[in-house]
Each structure stands twice: as C-alpha cells, then as structure tokens.
Length: 234
Ligand SMILES: C[S@@+](CC[C@H](N)C(=O)[O-])C[C@H]1O[C@@H](n2cnc3c(N)ncnc32)[C@H](O)[C@@H]1O
Ligand SMILES: Nc1nc2[nH]cc(C(=O)O)c2c(=O)[nH]1
Ligand code: SF4
Ligand SMILES: [Mg+2]
Image (cartoon, rainbow, N blue to C red; front, side, top):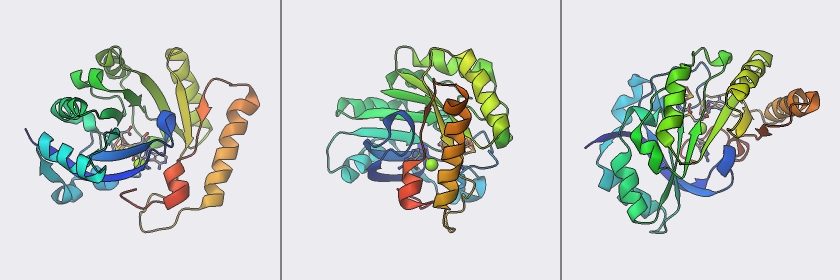
C-alpha cells in the first residue's frame, strides 16, 4: 500500500494547538480536497507540486521517522494536505507497535477508521475567510470515527466574521476543547513574515474573545512561525 508523502521532517516542536512545544516528527501527506485562500502548505495541496511527493510504503515512512528521531519513540504529527484522503492505518499500527504516538491534523471533511488509533485528533474546520464550506455531517462523522481517542477543535481566525463563525462552531460542540489561532497572511515560503503584524493579530484576537467575555477558547500563536517564519521542514 502506497501513500503520497510531501515531506517528512523533524524532530521539531509542535508549533500549534493542544500539543504546542512537544517534540515531534511531521509526516506531511500530499493532496487536499480543500483550497483554502490562505493555506500555508500549498506545496502539499496543489497538484502542480505532485511530482515532488514521494510514493512511500508504511514501513519506509516509519523507517524515516525512526531515522530522524534517532530511534526514540515520540509523538508523530500527521498533517498535509488532508491526510484523511489516504489510509494512514498501517503507518499508525506499525508505529504504535514501536512505541510511537500519533496526532493528526485534518479539516474534518473525510472520516477514517484509523482516527480511533490516534493519541490526538485535531479537527480544524475552516471559517469564511478560507473560502471553503464546512460539511457538518462529515465533521460529525470524523468525531464519531475517533471513538475514544482524544479530540480537539482548532480554528484559524482572520477577522470578525471568522470569530462569529467560530462562536457558532463552539456552541455546536460544547464538549470539545477549542483552540483559536490568528491567521498568518504571509504564506509565501520565500518571503519574510511580519512578527509585529502577527503579534498585533494575536492581541486583537485576545481582546475580541477574552476582552469581550468569551472565556472558553484557548488562544495560541503559531510558535514555529514566530521562530522560523514560513520556512518549510520545521
Ligand atoms: C496546513 S493545514 C493541514 C491539515 C489540514 N488540511 C487542516 O487544514 O487542518 C494545518 C493547520 O494549519 C492551519 N493553517 C493553514 N494556513 C494557515 C495560515 N495562513 N495561518 C494560520 N494557520 C494556518 C490550518 O487551519 C490547520 O489548522
Ligand atoms: N513546527 C510545526 N508545527 C506545526 N503545527 C502544525 C503544522 C502543520 O503545518 O500542520 C506545523 C508545522 O509545519 N510545523
Ligand atoms: S484544508 Fe488544510 S491543507 Fe487543505 S488547503 Fe486548507 S489549510 Fe491547506
Ligand atoms: Mg503549517
């Protein structure tokens, strides 16, 4: 069974959400069913980059992960693209036997049985600024497929409309811990990010949530972007 892999890199630290700061190796799957206007990983999305994606067997993927981690089992982050359009079940089964844990980031558009084997399923539905529409039935199917595996929701916020949308999403899933992260408007890997601009967005987001009495979401910047900018492979 072959998977399309855009990149495998690390060890680095998880820069976003519930596991922020945790050492991890990333497996970035190639291919996505969405086209978010502000996607920061287009090299793993658009088919014009597909010639750079490696066809890999599960054993080869875990060999590469083990090589990068020096054989130390750690948390592996599966991202993409949308990893849920492929079958990561065998990779997860193989890795778990060797002591690795797996977290997965997906937008929640495709449900998979292998979600149940995750240490964390991060569902990141897309707000209006992305230009994508959420199929909540598919999102519910993702939650159900995860079963007893821990699940969280993470929403990227660019503007007031996104925030209002996130409020509705939070009301829909009161039991799901919600992470909000400010959007990074500069996604070109060859251009520098604007650290003050990102800090300003973070400040605006804190004031617009906590400052207006919405006290349940956790609000975090993209730590890896603050450290490395839009560099790939970190
Ligand atoms: C590149 S996506 C890959 C996984 C999956 N397709 C998804 O969107 O959840 C990983 C995470 O990066 C977030 N993201 C993408 N572009 C971003 C941007 N410009 N600023 C902030 N977060 C971004 C996504 O919302 C998602 O939470
Ligand atoms: N360090 C680091 N943390 C991340 N968290 C989510 C990422 C992603 O692109 O899915 C990401 C990434 O690409 N690098
Ligand atoms: S769903 Fe994720 S990978 Fe796909 S286009 Fe949107 S942010 Fe990029
Ligand atoms: Mg990223």
